[in-house]
Image (cartoon, rainbow, N blue to C red; front, side):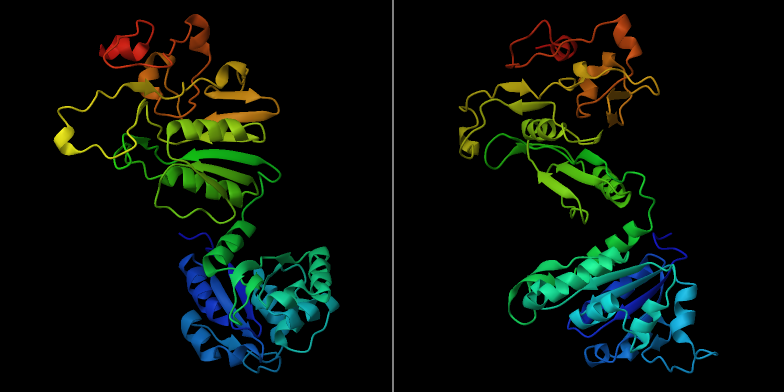
Length: 390
C-alpha cells in the first residue's frame, strides 16, 4: 500500500525547463498508489511532449479547453470534480499571475478557477530575478490569502546559469509535500525532538566503538511527525539515510555530543522521542593518531568512562498519571519506547534518556551510576561494576 492510495491528482504543467522533473514526479506519485490526470499549457508542450506523459501515466493528457474526448466537452469542470487535489509543477511566473488575478484563458487556468473546494498546490519555478520581482511576490501573497498552498521554491543552480531562489523543488520533495498535505495535522504547532541512529565512540582517528543501528525507526518517526504538522528536530548519529524533507537534522557522532544536543533543544520541544542506540562507554583518552598494530603490545591501557547517565534529565519531571513510561513537564511531554524496570539499568542505558514506570521507583531508589570508570578499577557504587566485576 502507498501513501497516496485512492488519491486522484490533477497534475498541471506550465511553461518552464523544470517540466522534465515532473515526469519523475509522475512516476513517484504512481509508485505511492496515486492516479494522475495531466493537464499541460501550450508553453509546457514546448519543453515536454504530451506523448511522454501519456506513456508514463497510461491516461489521456489534456492540453486544450476544447478537448472533445470528454462527452460534454467540459474538461475544466469534469477534471476537478472527483479530484483530491490539483498540483501545478512547474508553476511559471505567468501562470501565477493569472491565478492571482483570476484569469482563465486556457484549460489549466480555467479548471483552477472552476475547482470549487478542490485544494490547489503550486510549485513555483522561474529565474531568481523573476521570483524576487515585487509583482511576483504580491501574486504569491495573494495566492496564499486565497488558500493556495505554495511549495517552495528552492535555492540553487538554475538552467540560465545563475544561482538563487526560484528553483522548483525536487520530485521527492514535492512528493513528500503532497503526502504530508493529506495527513491529519494532529501535531500542528508542536515541536518534536527525536534521537535516532547509533553513536560512535572514538578510539583513534580510524577506529570507533559503535553498533549496527540503521536509524530507520527514528527517521520514520521524524517523517511521520512532520507529516502530522509538527516542527521536527532530529538528532542523528552516523547513518546512510537521507534526512526526511522538512526535518531539521543535527548530526552528531558520540554519546556526549548527543547528550549536549538533546539538552540544548529540550527547552523548546513539546514532545521528545528517544530511539537512538547510544553507546554505554567511551574511551577517556582517545588517541590523536592511528594506533599502529606493531605497537599493540606496548600501547597504554585505554581507560573507559560511562556515557552520560540515562536518567540525568528525569528527576525534574513529575510522573504522568495517564500512562506508565511517560513523564510530563507541563505542558510538555516526554516519550520513550522503553518500559524496562530500573533493576535492568545496565541494559536500559542503551536506550537514550529512557523512562521507566514510576511506581517501582517509590518502593526502591534507583541505583546510582558512576560518572567515570577506569578499567580495571572497581567502583562499589556502580551497578555495572557490581554485575560484571572488575
